[in-house]
Image 1 (tube, rainbow, N blue to C red):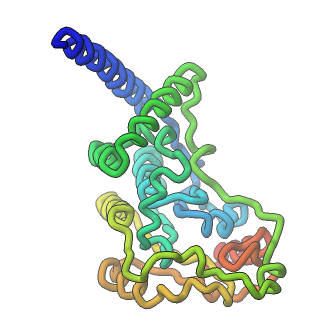
Image 2 (spheres, rainbow, N blue to C red; image 1 turned 180 degrees about the horizontal axis):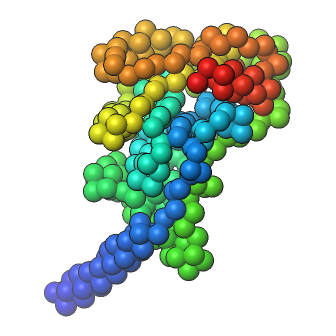
Length: 289
């Protein structure tokens, strides 16, 4: 029995030791070679989830790069931001999507929603690893193995460019707005199955990290709420949202475009624009900012 335990411990030590060595070495190589460089004239970036992804058409806005991604949480937004700022000293303004949905408890589940751990593994800090391991230890170990494999793949194929794989404007050609408005049984509140006081426990802390990083680097950070359809029923969290914003981010500029003038034909659904709406908004944004 003792021999069995000894051999088991030895085996596990070899396995986990090998994993640790591959993790540290592959992370080091990726970190030293990763390319997050933007065009020299790009001094503004946009970060966030699906709302800004389909709102900011950066081909129509001078000196701006849209790096938002559907399903993104602030946890991954922070990983992008710190790497972008390291390699792009010309960036002086950061626009971050901020709306009632982004402060809710369900945002905490986005750590695992898109299997993003492998994409950003090389850039995690100790606290990031601790959070992931504490939240879902089995899931963390599984994603860790995938992340090491992805690191090795990048190294073997010499693929160190990240700009094209961490987000960007999405051209949305289709629209479901008419069918949604015509369907009496449509209930946009279904996605809000949480109580009003169920706020994010840890993802929101990464928004604070983004704010502190920008302040440390003397970068202007601006919160943005992308346009909504007037019938979008996400406003039932407006009171708690505004209270939270004023209590925690009162000094951060907030551009609230929830009531930006749009036609039904400008929307994909009640909370996202299609390419027509994105063009209208982006041309206006280009003139104003």
